[in-house]
Length: 105
Image 1: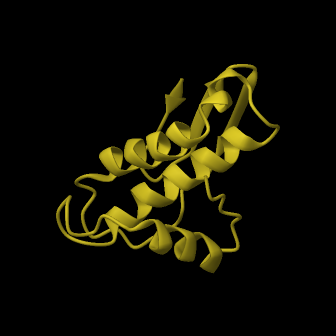
Image 2: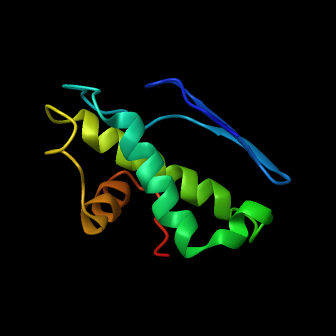
């Protein structure tokens, strides 16, 4: 279960893991597509590591959720829902620029 709140905090419970994290602080131009980008980022990571849904490695879900948050935040920085969609390399760069660990699944 994931509960998002736009630019506010995100909470999750996946298997035995629960947590909260702040959204990335970005200058939002248009929030259209942010939720879709978040879910796409989440699914992208989980497809490559489905065991995370069953508990997986410690901290793995947090890393996946952070990646998804980055995807959603990046879409908010441009107009519309399609053009601002980021590539995998762009998401990793965005996270690194904010001092956040990014996993490559």
